Image 1 (cartoon, chains in turn green, blue):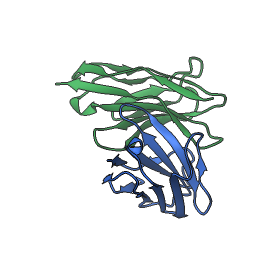
Image 2: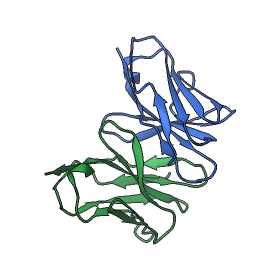
Image 3: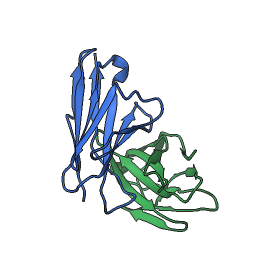
Length: 112
Length: 116
């Protein structure tokens, strides 16, 4: 079945550092890909998404590109802030059944 | 943007009692709602999918008689944990999908259930 694998955390960086969180997926069809963020004590929020190959999703300085050839959707940010500390989930949705399949999440700590 | 609320945000109950959690879409009509369970430091696990006016579809391994789901209107779905036990303690999250955006689900803030 479809699945999502993302790098294990926690990831600890200093403020203004470059961030990459790796995510790869397996899917039989052509899924949509997502990054969700969960701030402490809150529910999930959609951070960005891409619906087809080579699409780039971007929001709040974060970017991820849908790479069909490597089945990847890595999350990047050029300069992180303390307020970016959260858990980040990579996810996919197979259009045929509406379900979202999540990775295990990566906890990010940004030190001032 | 679309807003989904959950009530209560936290609940503590005694073992053997039942707990109802509400999920509401505040500014859109949700034809489909999803219920997830999240264990500490784990990902979200889909429990069931509910469509307004029909029976919920449960994922493999989820007891339908224990986790009762009702989607009585286009803005409200409820999850009732019946005869709760300590192992049911978890973070329960709902999401809702409307009719306009095919892919996007909007998530509620979650309900933390603690069973003593």
